[in-house]
Length: 124
Image 1 (cartoon, rainbow, N blue to C red):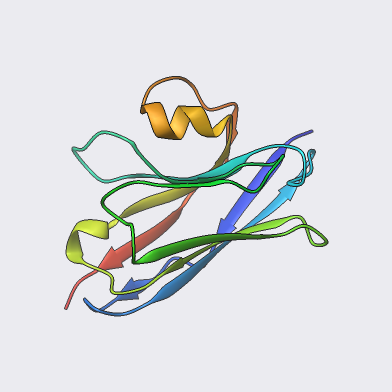
Image 2 (image 1 turned 30 degrees about the vertical axis):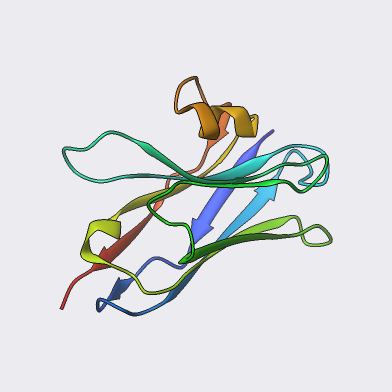
């Protein structure tokens, strides 16, 4: 049974940092791709970042390049998102999900599985 459980969301001031974590079970990150998506109220879902299971290739949305870093711990089967220099427009529910990284890059298609999400609010 596939399960993804996110944690680490919080209220943070603009310019601050947060690290999101995702505990994965039911598949292994060294084989399957996984990443982060976010959805803000009234906005479309956005694929933030993905890391390829097979070769570790990484995709970032233009909106987060240079500020966010995705990583994984294969031994613990966990996925992370380090978010620096946060902006109010980063406010959203962040979900951990699995699918081909092509879904993130193309911006279309369905994610295979995702978690319940963790709220990130950037506000002064």
